[in-house]
Amino acid sequence: YAIRRGRSAQNMVPVSQILQDVMNRLEELSKRYSAIPGLSTGLSDVDRVISGLNDSDLILLAARPGMGKTSFALNVALNVAKAVHKTVAVFSLEMSREQLATRLLASEALVENNRLKTGALRETDWEKIAGAATILNKVDIRIDDNPMLSVADMNAKCRRLDDLGLVVIDYLQLMTSAGGKGYAGENRQQVVSDISRMLKI
Image (cartoon, rainbow, N blue to C red):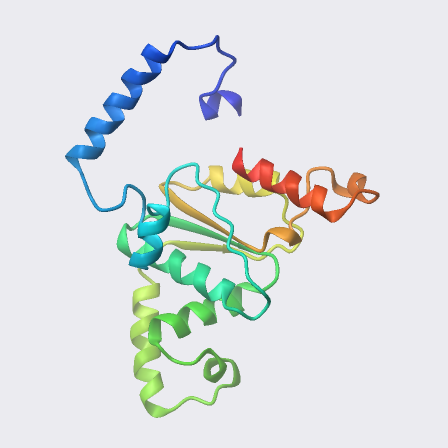
């Protein structure tokens, strides 16, 4: 795994050597300059603040319950899958894969999610839903709804995906830590800190 990550144990590196890598990166960025260096979230104001979604970024989306965190994250996931045609992995520890697919369909069709959940659909809704389903069939979004997911499980599954552009986890506090039952006596803050650290790594 260490070899795959390309981070074998190495000696300290002089800044002159690192600067060469930085200069090469700057040259590459200038050639394909865009307003943001990373993948777009689809929301220009957010992109401007966070410079898009970049490699090695760990972005936490926090808000009170019912504020739309899942909807926001799914909109970002859908935009990345549609705009840059990369694979997006969505790990849902709270909702089933059917619930998430319904939300994606509602978002793309611009039909209220409640109408899809209850089946109270209008005649015009069906046409929108059919069009949205056609678009969703063309994107590569992989959904995993294992409620007992650990970071190690997620790593193993993500390593099997080609051209992975974004990983979405909904939501972090429900993840199982590497320590498993060994964390029973420790507070939840320590567990979440441990999970966050492993995700960043």
